[in-house]
Image (tube, rainbow, N blue to C red; front, side, top):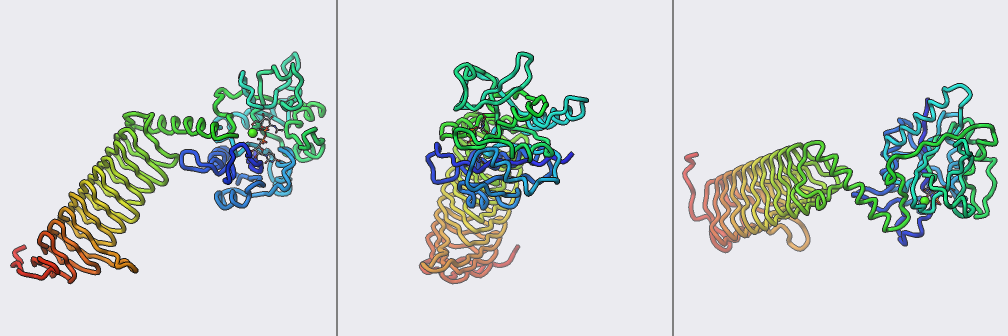
Length: 456
Ligand code: UD1
Ligand code: CA
């Protein structure tokens, strides 16, 4: 059975009061529409079709090639939106699974149950139906369509709030806006929908149409009301963020991660964390970040687009685009920027800033230093207050420091410059020329005053 998801995303979203298309507003670090795509992909291997319109080009650029796009122009309602997928799908799919891009909390399991229910009915003699829809029962109407049933409980129609009678408005069973259709019936049925008083073609009219065709529409009631919350305002956006964050944190804890205070652990959707890692309060783990096993991160840390190896520690620090190997300890108050790569066992103390640099295994940078465009070998010591002067106002220049080097406190390394293996610089020296291996350089500008014997 071929199931093709169709995600509706052409609506305007005026109530967000935003220049950004509604479905691109971020939730847990990903655009809202990402969740609808993820969920669709969990239910079907078929490439989803996304109907775009308002802000369509921006949505297309943000989403990329993971879905097939069709443009709805002008936007004449939800039935008209689904209709736009017909040229692509007619004759090539058995089922059409319709969801909305602004329902990021809908879970794949719920969609799977919907499809399952539809297929089971398809196999039972005389009970075939071209439509299975998701409903919710709640006192909070939220502007949703009402489900009209007969006394026997058969679904008769969906009535939009704008067209409902006072009695119909009392109905507590609501249309979630998620449907599974049999394609062979769907496309022609869409042509038979007439224009509503609102000037739109309502997809919801398909329920009554199925009944008049002699079928019994099937309804599945969602167990969890929060799943079908649609995002229309910034208030809804914050509600959804809270639910998604809670889900992410719960999944991490279930997988063996300790969150000391889940309420202040802000962990984005795609972050991966190994077991026995402890996340202290007020910690932000963002973007494409992965953290190994038995690490300690936080409190008060931000880790963005970075990888951290096993058993490392980050204490009250900020990492952006950094690669940290195993057994590294960082902070408090360190700042690792793009291209910082710390090898195994590196120690970074307070107020270290590192950018586009490699620090070899076991190297230490204890206090107040800036290291940029630099390579440091293993087991070197960068003294307090060391600065790599990498920028001449126009270009960046490299600094190369060997292994087992001792850079004295407050050394200025004026790049491009090299300091050889086992060399030392005196406190406060300004190094403008290369320092050979096994030597001591001091002064301003620094000059070599001693050569060490290579005793190893
Ligand atoms: C719709 C349902 C309503 C249901 C509610 C659940 C209809 C007529 N009503 O109402 O019964 O309770 O969802 O959330 O379907 N869209 C397009 N093109 C359009 C219009 C809408 O792509 O021309 C998209 C929107 O971007 C959105 C989805 O369809 O993703 C739903 O549209 P929306 O206007 O939010 O419908 P509701 O009024 O909420
Ligand atoms: Ca809506």
